[in-house]
Image (tube, rainbow, N blue to C red; front, side, top):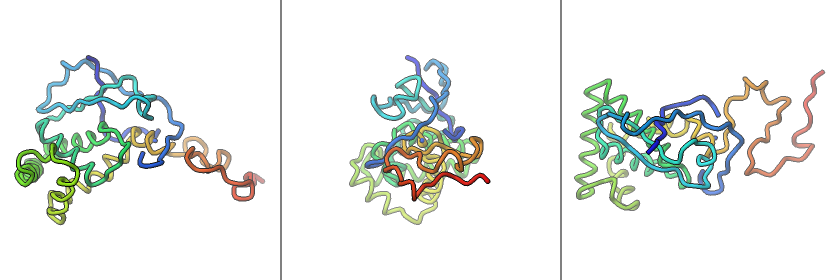
Length: 210
């Protein structure tokens, strides 16, 4: 089986309800064989056919290698991220970036590793076995119960960059990325979101270039 090892924030490239997709280049994600993934835990999944990512990714199968946390701990962090920021159409592959980034913190700092492991263990205990396998309603109640705890703050804070600062999220939300490399917006226009109606000529006149 061939998989896509996905990484953290990528070069700017862009779902929730009626959130559409913008025009972004095909993702240049490297391919590797599964046996090369030798970490402590491996998160593996597939990208839904017909989604924005399926049209861009070179393979429908993705994988994330965890160096310190286990697969079960990574899955718990993915579910916690989805509970905190529940985008229906955002692929699990994006939530796996959250687990990967938190795993990197755990690998670099034993105190961070302990905080994450203790927090996940507490969620599992409160869920009666496995937080990741609990239903959406129960997971929401469990996460609300720990709001204000350091573990909660760590995971929620990491969500901001891990879930939104990567080109898989850009493809999903329709964000075309930074504009300055392309000459800015003055000649390209501001209206590049396909899920919004085109503005009138009065609302978006041609630029004055002197």
